Amino acid sequence: MQASGMIKGLSHEYGDPIQYYLALGKGTLPLNPVLGEPLRLQFTGEIECVYCGRKIKKTYNHGSCYVCFKKRPENDLCIVKPSLCHFEEGTCRDAAFGEQHCMIPHYVYLAVSSDVKVGLTRKNNELKRWADQGAIKAIPIAEVPNRKTAGELEEALADYLPDKTNWRKMLKGEINDVDLKQVRDEVLRLVPESFRHYILTEEEIVQLTYPVLEEVGQIKSYNLDKQPQIEDRLIGIKGQYLLFAGGVINIKKYCGYHVQVKVV
Image (tube, rainbow, N blue to C red):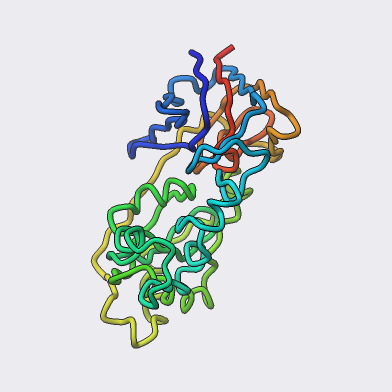
Protein backbone atom coordinates (compact mmCIF):
# COMPACT_ATOMS: atom_id res chain seq x y z
CA MET A 1 0.00 0.00 0.00
CA GLN A 2 1.27 3.46 -0.89
CA ALA A 3 -0.24 6.86 -1.58
CA SER A 4 0.77 10.51 -1.73
CA GLY A 5 -0.88 13.91 -1.48
CA MET A 6 -1.76 16.75 0.85
CA ILE A 7 -2.86 15.83 4.38
CA LYS A 8 -6.42 16.91 5.17
CA GLY A 9 -6.73 15.06 8.49
CA LEU A 10 -8.18 11.79 9.71
CA SER A 11 -11.74 10.90 8.81
CA HIS A 12 -13.67 8.00 10.31
CA GLU A 13 -16.77 5.86 10.30
CA TYR A 14 -18.45 4.96 13.57
CA GLY A 15 -18.14 1.26 14.35
CA ASP A 16 -16.69 -1.19 16.83
CA PRO A 17 -13.94 -0.24 16.51
CA ILE A 18 -14.03 3.09 14.68
CA GLN A 19 -12.78 2.79 11.09
CA TYR A 20 -10.12 5.40 10.29
CA TYR A 21 -8.99 6.89 7.00
CA LEU A 22 -6.18 9.29 6.16
CA ALA A 23 -7.66 12.06 4.02
CA LEU A 24 -4.91 12.60 1.48
CA GLY A 25 -5.40 14.87 -1.52
CA LYS A 26 -8.66 13.96 -3.23
CA GLY A 27 -8.83 10.47 -1.76
CA THR A 28 -8.75 8.55 1.50
CA LEU A 29 -6.44 5.80 2.68
CA PRO A 30 -7.91 3.08 4.97
CA LEU A 31 -5.71 2.75 8.04
CA ASN A 32 -7.30 -0.03 10.10
CA PRO A 33 -6.08 -2.73 7.68
CA VAL A 34 -2.43 -1.68 8.16
CA LEU A 35 -2.46 -1.73 11.96
CA GLY A 36 0.54 -3.69 13.19
CA GLU A 37 2.51 -2.96 10.02
CA PRO A 38 5.57 -0.72 9.68
CA LEU A 39 4.49 2.53 8.03
CA ARG A 40 6.68 5.15 6.37
CA LEU A 41 5.45 8.77 6.39
CA GLN A 42 7.67 11.00 4.25
CA PHE A 43 7.19 14.80 4.21
CA THR A 44 8.15 16.11 0.76
CA GLY A 45 8.87 19.65 1.97
CA GLU A 46 5.85 21.14 0.17
CA ILE A 47 3.07 22.86 2.15
CA GLU A 48 -0.04 24.51 0.76
CA CYS A 49 -3.06 26.24 2.24
CA VAL A 50 -5.97 23.82 2.60
CA TYR A 51 -8.38 26.59 1.58
CA CYS A 52 -6.81 28.54 -1.28
CA GLY A 53 -3.95 26.28 -2.38
CA ARG A 54 -1.28 28.95 -1.91
CA LYS A 55 2.22 27.50 -1.42
CA ILE A 56 3.41 28.44 2.07
CA LYS A 57 6.31 27.84 4.47
CA LYS A 58 4.19 27.42 7.61
CA THR A 59 0.55 26.89 8.49
CA TYR A 60 -1.81 28.66 10.84
CA ASN A 61 -4.60 26.86 12.67
CA HIS A 62 -4.32 23.45 11.03
CA GLY A 63 -3.58 24.22 7.39
CA SER A 64 -4.34 27.88 6.70
CA CYS A 65 -2.10 30.42 5.06
CA TYR A 66 -1.91 33.71 6.95
CA VAL A 67 -4.43 35.43 4.62
CA CYS A 68 -7.03 32.68 5.11
CA PHE A 69 -6.27 32.61 8.82
CA LYS A 70 -7.23 36.28 9.05
CA LYS A 71 -10.23 36.16 6.70
CA ARG A 72 -11.85 32.72 6.71
CA PRO A 73 -14.82 32.19 9.08
CA GLU A 74 -13.39 28.82 10.13
CA ASN A 75 -10.50 30.70 11.75
CA ASP A 76 -12.45 33.40 13.58
CA LEU A 77 -12.00 33.66 17.36
CA CYS A 78 -15.62 32.60 17.93
CA ILE A 79 -14.80 29.13 16.58
CA VAL A 80 -12.68 28.44 19.66
CA LYS A 81 -14.78 30.69 21.94
CA PRO A 82 -18.35 30.16 20.71
CA SER A 83 -19.82 32.53 23.29
CA LEU A 84 -18.18 35.36 21.31
CA CYS A 85 -20.26 34.59 18.19
CA HIS A 86 -21.04 37.92 16.50
CA PHE A 87 -23.36 36.71 13.73
CA GLU A 88 -26.34 38.65 15.03
CA GLU A 89 -24.21 41.80 15.14
CA GLY A 90 -23.81 41.57 11.37
CA THR A 91 -20.01 41.19 11.54
CA CYS A 92 -19.66 37.49 10.71
CA ARG A 93 -16.77 36.87 8.30
CA ASP A 94 -19.17 34.89 6.08
CA ALA A 95 -22.91 35.07 6.73
CA ALA A 96 -23.62 31.93 4.68
CA PHE A 97 -21.09 29.98 6.78
CA GLY A 98 -22.69 31.32 9.95
CA GLU A 99 -26.17 30.27 8.82
CA GLN A 100 -24.97 26.77 7.95
CA HIS A 101 -22.63 26.06 10.86
CA CYS A 102 -23.57 28.33 13.77
CA MET A 103 -27.23 29.34 13.58
CA ILE A 104 -28.42 25.75 13.85
CA PRO A 105 -29.19 23.43 16.80
CA HIS A 106 -26.20 22.42 18.92
CA TYR A 107 -25.66 19.91 21.68
CA VAL A 108 -23.85 20.63 24.91
CA TYR A 109 -22.46 17.31 26.10
CA LEU A 110 -20.37 15.48 28.65
CA ALA A 111 -17.57 13.24 27.38
CA VAL A 112 -14.91 11.05 28.94
CA SER A 113 -11.58 11.19 27.14
CA SER A 114 -9.15 11.72 30.04
CA ASP A 115 -11.52 13.03 32.70
CA VAL A 116 -15.13 14.12 32.30
CA LYS A 117 -15.28 17.31 30.22
CA VAL A 118 -18.02 19.55 28.92
CA GLY A 119 -18.15 20.43 25.25
CA LEU A 120 -20.40 21.45 22.39
CA THR A 121 -21.02 20.38 18.82
CA ARG A 122 -23.52 20.81 16.02
CA LYS A 123 -26.46 18.42 16.28
CA ASN A 124 -25.86 15.38 14.05
CA ASN A 125 -22.10 16.03 14.21
CA GLU A 126 -21.62 14.56 17.68
CA LEU A 127 -20.08 11.21 16.71
CA LYS A 128 -17.42 12.93 14.61
CA ARG A 129 -16.70 15.40 17.39
CA TRP A 130 -16.40 12.74 20.08
CA ALA A 131 -14.18 10.51 17.96
CA ASP A 132 -11.93 13.48 17.08
CA GLN A 133 -11.47 14.07 20.82
CA GLY A 134 -10.73 10.45 21.60
CA ALA A 135 -13.74 10.16 23.93
CA ILE A 136 -14.61 6.64 25.09
CA LYS A 137 -18.15 7.61 26.07
CA ALA A 138 -20.33 10.70 25.83
CA ILE A 139 -23.87 11.93 26.39
CA PRO A 140 -25.74 15.09 25.30
CA ILE A 141 -27.13 17.08 28.23
CA ALA A 142 -28.77 20.01 26.43
CA GLU A 143 -29.99 20.96 22.96
CA VAL A 144 -29.81 24.69 22.22
CA PRO A 145 -30.79 26.72 19.12
CA ASN A 146 -27.36 28.01 18.07
CA ARG A 147 -23.61 27.94 18.68
CA LYS A 148 -23.50 31.12 20.77
CA THR A 149 -26.03 29.77 23.28
CA ALA A 150 -24.12 26.49 23.44
CA GLY A 151 -20.92 28.41 24.17
CA GLU A 152 -22.58 30.38 26.94
CA LEU A 153 -23.85 27.21 28.63
CA GLU A 154 -20.49 25.51 28.18
CA GLU A 155 -18.79 28.47 29.89
CA ALA A 156 -21.25 28.32 32.78
CA LEU A 157 -20.50 24.63 33.33
CA ALA A 158 -16.75 25.01 32.82
CA ASP A 159 -16.66 26.55 36.29
CA TYR A 160 -17.27 23.01 37.55
CA LEU A 161 -15.86 20.78 34.79
CA PRO A 162 -12.86 21.13 32.46
CA ASP A 163 -13.53 21.93 28.80
CA LYS A 164 -10.17 20.60 27.58
CA THR A 165 -8.79 17.08 27.12
CA ASN A 166 -5.47 15.97 28.59
CA TRP A 167 -4.19 14.45 25.34
CA ARG A 168 -1.36 12.53 26.99
CA LYS A 169 -3.75 10.76 29.38
CA MET A 170 -6.20 10.20 26.53
CA LEU A 171 -3.58 8.46 24.38
CA LYS A 172 -2.21 6.35 27.24
CA GLY A 173 -5.70 5.28 28.30
CA GLU A 174 -5.30 6.82 31.76
CA ILE A 175 -9.01 7.49 32.07
CA ASN A 176 -11.13 7.79 35.19
CA ASP A 177 -13.96 5.25 35.24
CA VAL A 178 -17.09 7.24 36.05
CA ASP A 179 -20.83 6.72 36.03
CA LEU A 180 -21.57 9.27 33.32
CA LYS A 181 -25.32 9.31 33.94
CA GLN A 182 -24.72 10.05 37.61
CA VAL A 183 -22.33 12.86 36.64
CA ARG A 184 -24.96 14.11 34.17
CA ASP A 185 -27.59 14.27 36.92
CA GLU A 186 -25.20 16.17 39.18
CA VAL A 187 -24.20 18.60 36.44
CA LEU A 188 -27.80 19.31 35.42
CA ARG A 189 -28.45 20.67 38.90
CA LEU A 190 -25.77 23.27 38.17
CA VAL A 191 -27.34 24.52 34.94
CA PRO A 192 -28.35 28.21 35.31
CA GLU A 193 -32.09 28.89 35.30
CA SER A 194 -31.97 30.68 31.93
CA PHE A 195 -30.79 27.46 30.23
CA ARG A 196 -32.93 24.91 32.06
CA HIS A 197 -35.59 24.60 29.34
CA TYR A 198 -32.87 23.24 27.01
CA ILE A 199 -31.96 20.32 29.30
CA LEU A 200 -32.02 16.73 28.00
CA THR A 201 -32.64 13.97 30.55
CA GLU A 202 -33.46 10.88 28.45
CA GLU A 203 -30.38 10.62 26.20
CA GLU A 204 -28.38 7.39 26.27
CA ILE A 205 -24.62 7.11 26.68
CA VAL A 206 -22.71 6.51 23.45
CA GLN A 207 -19.67 4.22 23.73
CA LEU A 208 -16.70 4.56 21.37
CA THR A 209 -14.00 1.96 20.76
CA TYR A 210 -10.71 2.77 19.03
CA PRO A 211 -8.43 0.55 16.94
CA VAL A 212 -5.50 0.24 19.35
CA LEU A 213 -3.42 -2.95 19.37
CA GLU A 214 -1.07 -2.10 22.21
CA GLU A 215 -0.85 0.32 25.09
CA VAL A 216 1.15 3.43 24.36
CA GLY A 217 4.28 3.71 26.49
CA GLN A 218 6.13 6.96 27.07
CA ILE A 219 4.60 9.69 24.90
CA LYS A 220 7.01 11.03 22.32
CA SER A 221 5.66 13.35 19.62
CA TYR A 222 6.92 12.97 16.08
CA ASN A 223 7.50 16.31 14.30
CA LEU A 224 7.56 16.35 10.49
CA ASP A 225 9.35 19.71 10.43
CA LYS A 226 12.27 18.27 12.41
CA GLN A 227 12.00 14.67 11.23
CA PRO A 228 10.65 14.61 7.64
CA GLN A 229 10.65 10.82 7.50
CA ILE A 230 8.91 8.67 10.09
CA GLU A 231 9.22 4.90 9.79
CA ASP A 232 7.62 2.98 12.62
CA ARG A 233 5.07 0.26 13.37
CA LEU A 234 1.50 1.57 13.56
CA ILE A 235 -0.08 0.26 16.77
CA GLY A 236 -3.23 2.35 17.02
CA ILE A 237 -5.34 5.33 16.07
CA LYS A 238 -7.23 7.55 18.48
CA GLY A 239 -8.69 11.01 18.09
CA GLN A 240 -6.58 12.70 15.40
CA TYR A 241 -3.45 10.80 16.44
CA LEU A 242 -1.56 7.97 14.81
CA LEU A 243 0.05 5.84 17.51
CA PHE A 244 3.36 4.19 16.64
CA ALA A 245 5.53 1.87 18.70
CA GLY A 246 8.07 4.66 19.19
CA GLY A 247 5.93 7.81 19.24
CA VAL A 248 2.72 9.56 18.22
CA ILE A 249 1.79 12.17 15.63
CA ASN A 250 -1.14 14.58 15.62
CA ILE A 251 -2.22 14.40 11.98
CA LYS A 252 -4.45 17.47 12.27
CA LYS A 253 -1.37 19.57 13.09
CA TYR A 254 0.08 18.75 9.65
CA CYS A 255 -2.91 19.53 7.45
CA GLY A 256 -1.57 21.11 4.26
CA TYR A 257 1.67 19.10 4.31
CA HIS A 258 2.41 16.97 1.25
CA VAL A 259 3.47 13.46 2.21
CA GLN A 260 4.16 10.05 0.75
CA VAL A 261 2.79 7.10 2.76
CA LYS A 262 3.89 3.51 2.31
CA VAL A 263 3.70 0.20 4.16
CA VAL A 264 7.28 -1.06 4.29
